[in-house]
Image 1 (cartoon, helix red, strand yellow):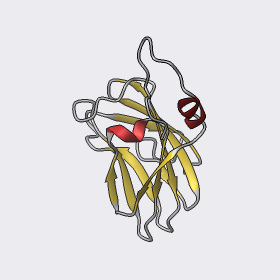
Image 2: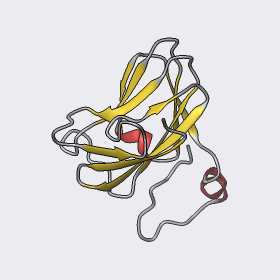
Image 3: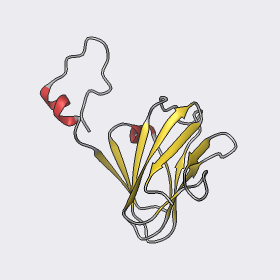
Image 4: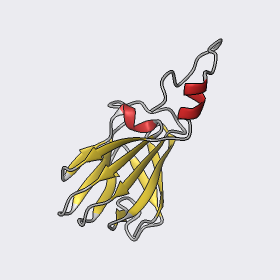
Length: 129
């Protein structure tokens, strides 16, 4: 990931920082249950690789206060189906066009973007089922 981001007033954009804008850091996960962390929300691609069915959980705002507009990108490279959902479904809302709106799934080699639109509201878009 590019260093120095997010920037603050009076920062000078260096060549290294500018060139880093086009790359993603990779956060490889091989567990069957992953809860996103603050560093997943900026130029990070979370890869999920497990042969078994697994979960990709979005925490409550009280646990991890992502800024509204944050996008978390997930790519399922494992054979197991990845289900995206909230850690606390009564508090955090996850919506998608998937068969189960609150728990969209990703098959192998499919990707989705989780977009925070409110304090505890997320939309999931991409290659979901």
